[in-house]
Length: 387
Image 1: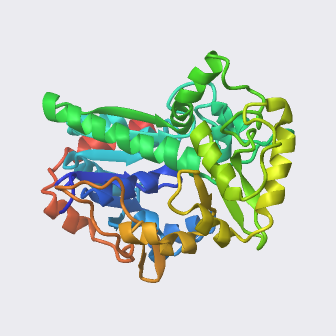
Image 2: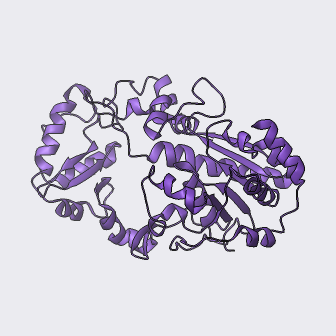
Image 3: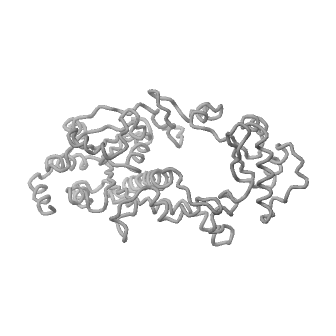
């Protein structure tokens, strides 16, 4: 196994949102990740309620192995328990209490394997009035306060796809928490529960903004600040060909370079810091930028410090010279995949691969992981009490 997490075994109860993303991040870095899915006869019903994405297109499942277990059957639960007893990390993304009822809660898993890192990925966390509520990315971002800020002045908030809650606040923060707990376990020999709530993670992303708010440098009125499209020199503009240019000329030196590249007489334009005249300044910038195509503007600003970039589609981003040289995206099996990040010099991540469509037999995993035998009778008795 290549990567810094080579040798780390991760058992994941299949889920949506941040669960597959965390799995991918850990697998990219060399961990052996095994996803537990429902048997085929039950999976067909479940697929009807999801996006129906076929395995070969499920990029978030790259590098991940799959095994089928019926967790409503005590025998399937016992197999999962044995695998967890030989694993370093256990990940689940159900509402609080669900895995406890299955017999796979933290008390049971840590009871068999005190050194395991037990990660729980949810929207609202393991406690609090909303812990049992269903939700999606948009709900967690709204609950955190961040969605309120994602709007232009006078317009409704716009959710940024599901990048903030599922992947940044949930997946990336979850992977960070897991690796932190793994590092601590190497010192103490003891595992622990990692409570990953997407609402917590998104709130954490706003740390800098909270400082700006407290200092009176960021208004709670959306679309009126320097970095939320309020400032005309930090926004996107339509070009002659209908494509867009991104302008981020915040600092005075960068702003002067931006104005110089426009090729217009800007001597009578409003001052950069004259907020009252920002609407007029926006009109002047827009009227100038619409006069050329996006690629023409990109050529004008290439190699400058004006902080101007073409707004690229995904295919354009993959082909852009800078990104292509770094291998930012790679086409694998006809599917565009982002490269693993960050980049480690001595123990690099795995290369992106086509997600596996086959399954590994649970019996083979038990042998490969040298999974210990458990007290089956005790487990069955515990399941009967919980049911």
